[in-house]
Image 1 (tube, helix red, strand yellow):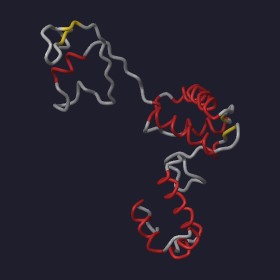
Image 2 (cartoon, one colour; image 1 turned 90 degrees about the horizontal axis):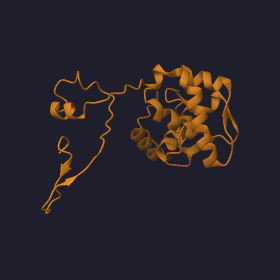
Image 3 (tube, one colour; image 1 turned 90 degrees about the vertical axis):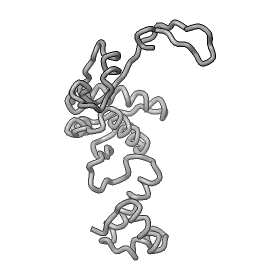
Image 4 (cartoon, one colour; image 1 turned 120 degrees about the vertical axis):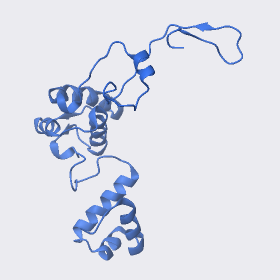
Length: 185
């Protein structure tokens, strides 16, 4: 079908000719992939290959990407949002294993949680931060896990006191700690 540029729909009597371009993307080296990808499909898809290096290899692009995403987020939130030089430096110091999507998501969370127009490095909650001042997303489970960690740190891992501060029973807190993989350290 890919070579012939035509296909026959189920039940049709004639073939339909099409002129299409197929764009495929992966983070793996398919030429070096030993048996994990169909060779015949690889050769059919092969054509112009564009290698886009990961964000961690293009740290100089971070200020421009941040401006782009913050303009869009600012429009969504009805305000202008900028980064301080310290915030940009912190973003450039991070290794970005999740690439540009992770970068955008981090900025989305920072804009949503900060009620100001200029974000500083303390407003950026990077995933490797051991105990952030606030969660980096608004996902309810992540917020709940963050709150539990904060209260446990405040009570020096006293589960009974933490449960009282959270307004839940001790057993409920223990179950939530197990669910989120939070140990008493």
